[in-house]
Amino acid sequence: MKKLFLGLAVTASMMTFAQETQTVNQEPMKQDPIKKDKQPVRFGIKAGGNSSYFSEQKLSLDNQKLGFHAGVLVNIPLSQKFSLQPEVLYNQLGAKSVISSTDVTTGNTNVKTKSEYKTTMNYISVPLMVQMRPTERFYIEAGPEFSYFINGKNSGNSTITTTTGGTTTTQSVSNSEDINKDNVNKFNLGLGLGLGYDITQNIGINARYINSLTDMRNQKPEGTEPMNHRAFQLGLNYKF
Image (cartoon, rainbow, N blue to C red; front, side):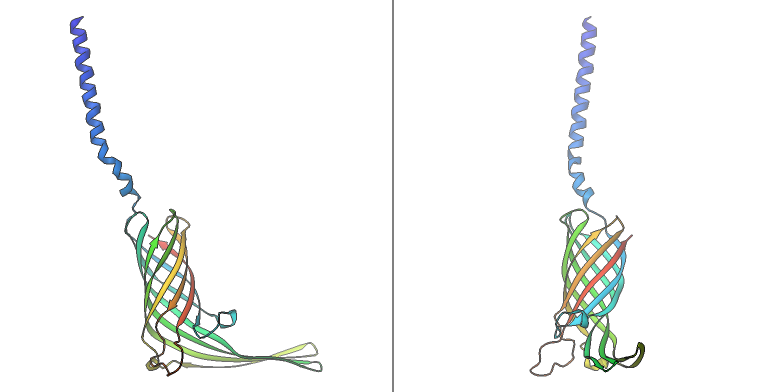
């Protein structure tokens, strides 16, 4: 009987020692969830639409020039909540303006005339966004955007629509010319502010507003206000 009690005591002591050793070994692992929540560096692609205008214009649908952006990105987590996202984009900016618009009715004849002028400017842009995530899927972002002017075009279009006795005829006249690169400031600095949402682990949607700080003209005429780009961007991204 004494040998039985002695054997049970030794066995209990060994089990207690083993349990304490396991507890001690597991304590450092309590910090693992923090490391696990920090995502790895991820590469991706993105594309979407632009709606841009010049700073000298009032914000309205009539002066919004539609364009697009497309390129690549890399998302670099800095912590659980913050990450750095550099991008390289082909970025189409510019503006549109309605020079004149008339609507005249004489007798049973109505004549509508509309003249528009559009500027398209193509850039290679490098946004450098700092992103902060209040939640797992939603984030806000801000940062500088560096751009280099590639080429551009000015185009005009006039449309005359005549309606007489239920019969309508339309005449259009258009012209186009390349922008002289010597008149454009090649480098442009802007600030971006946006937000995004990860629909899935790979697919996300992003909206961003870009406010240019650099006058797009190579030489600003004395006594004039700076002419800057303003742009709204909406697009999709895919992270690998």
